[in-house]
Image 1 (tube, rainbow, N blue to C red):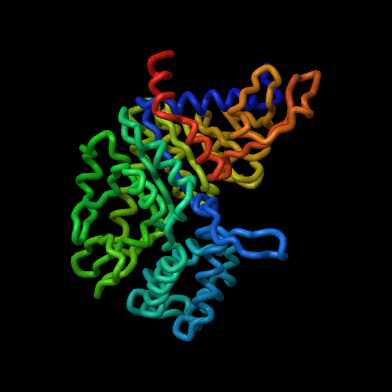
Image 2 (cartoon, rainbow, N blue to C red):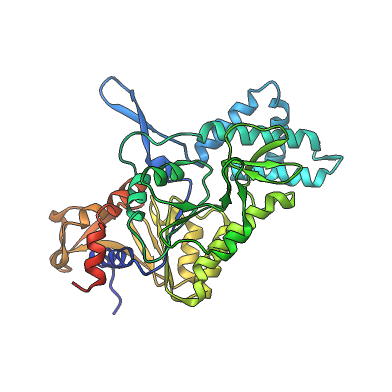
Length: 412
């Protein structure tokens, strides 16, 4: 008989088992919701409470900042207004920065040397460059000098030697790079070189790297990548170079082969990781709303191709806030969707509950619950999932020390 609720302690055991075994290939997929968990800059609110703001805003906040900046610009205001008119005319409901940048590039491809929807190719190219620079200005941040979920993730990776950990991210910022370097975690991100590092497709495909090196794959580009229009060499220098522009590509609709090459190569890494020659593998997804159907298809394809793979998606809000993820969880038996109010595991949806007979202190890191709410007929109490908050997930990872890993692998 199927239980009417999902046991909090059962989930804890599942996660601990996967995270504690070095020999199992694991990966982390970090979306735009992760930087929001890093709160900085206490500001006086009503004189009593102190309010902090995210280090980097989520997609909606970033969209507002970038588009307001462009609308108020004497240089780009008119072009931005024309793009807005196209979005409104086409009744695009989700007008986020990734959709808008994708539209600009699609119209540029259609325009050629002429016009598209009242915009010239030159206007569109100039707006593309301005949008990328505005994005850079708002996401080029450093982690504060305190413990963050990024630093906790890096420390979790540091002692792992059995198999390389792969990190996939749609974010353009450099927070992961900073955390890994400060924790002395060696990593490979597809680039080699020192003065002007270049994107090495052969190194990515052959993957003949030390196991102790983490793999960092930035699926949508990065604020420190550059695209040279003549040699088509991707660089990682901060300073602008004549003839180069930022390589940020949040849309899968690319308008030249030089932009497509890194994107397609890194997407292939995600496919390869999940399929893994049909061997066991686990992917932990955090801060991703599953609104990108192209990435959804890649994840679902990999899970269906490898029935021994497992994907755990940690969501901040209640399950109904993620309809696309719900559909995937109902179709894929090896996809576990976890929201504040419940989970969908093996296609079955259940609310969370803590069992009185199996309580342990570690559950407080994962759930909010009240012992006074135990029901006598079920010996359980309702619970609220906390690990959808990247900050809470970081604290949970911190509980997995290298000594714990050794004990589990030795069967102690």
